[in-house]
Amino acid sequence: MRNGLLTPLLCVLAASPLAAGPVKLEVRADGTKVMVNEPGDSRARRLAERLISPPTAELLGLIEQHASDRDLDPRLVQAVVQVESGYNARALSNKGAMGLMQLMPGTARDLAVEDPWDPVQNVRGGTAYLRQMLDRFGDLDLALAAYNAGPEAVVRHAGVPPFEETRNYLRKVYRLLRGDDGGEVLDGRRVLIQRDENNRIRMTTAGLGG
Image (cartoon, rainbow, N blue to C red; front, side, top):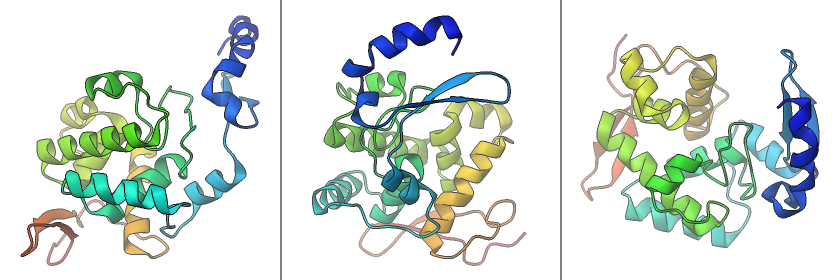
């Protein structure tokens, strides 16, 4: 953000979702100015190394409902929400991604999400998009990479893009799903999508070699 844009932006903060919490201006190493708005409890959840239950029973029910509707493991959806926003429904990234599952404006429009700040619409849209990526790529590594970096990047690189942000994103999600403190899961331990006897999605790395 250039200095000339700062004053008009601050003038509209009161009408923006940023007004939901404290706003601060951070300056990156390259001089780029970024508006940051993240409550401490959301940041703690986002950076936690264990999967944390949603902060309210209503949000847990919402995630379970839309995960079921899209034939997704609710724990996978919880992990994505936790890594994306720390369960902050008013989260806004410096790239413009919005809400619990950090939908980009164009993605939200494509998914008929009229209000990305509404938790019901956001989770509905986010789970629909995650389902699309799973159906398109048939592999959880690639689906998560597409969710983070965009499907075009996955196609362009014929796999998980070599972006440190995307690689770290996958590690964080898998760490939460495994319930441990980390460890490499890429490059030799691909996570496959399988269905159990009840036609539910399950994830496994069993029997996969390097």
